Amino acid sequence: MFGEPLAATARRIAEFRARAAAVMAARPPSTCRSGPILGATEGAAWDRARRILASIQKPGDPTGFGNDKKPLDQSARRLLDFAAQGETHDERLWMPIAEATGAMGNTSCLVGTPEQVARALLEYYKLGIHSFLIRGFDPFEDTVDFGRELIPRLRLGAEELDRAKAA
Image (cartoon, rainbow, N blue to C red; front, side, top):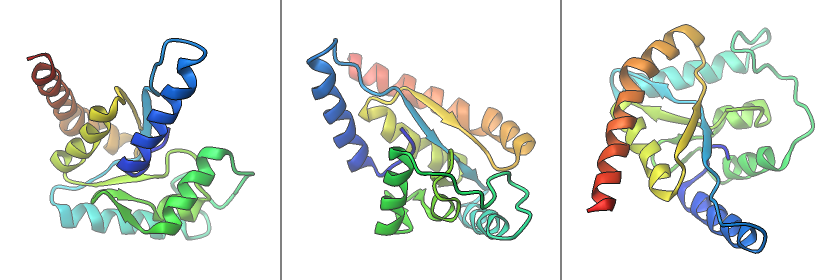
């Protein structure tokens, strides 16, 4: 699954569980793919998101997404449908990069500070998503930021949610 609006993710998990129950023990989709765009402040994160979008829309795109649009799979069609419904969903899920790239790869984005993006990812965790495939737009800097700022918050938040659920 790619990062999609929370309500749609919950519906998709319920549909998957219903279908899987007939064949095997119900097991929800376990991985959500998204491209976090972090900033020291919320404003800085949104400014960075707009700069990334502008660079993708230029010829010679340095992000590697480019304009080479291949035939769409079902997940890409879903992302484009959500992009058509609005630019931002659930406060942080930002769709213009998915739209600009034809929904190629991890192109739905969660935009905000590390705390805000971690909280947004934890909403997916509450729905049953327990693995996140995150891809940045600056491979080195984003990897450092994710490792220092985002992943520790995700781990701590997941541990807190698990403890609360067990209690």
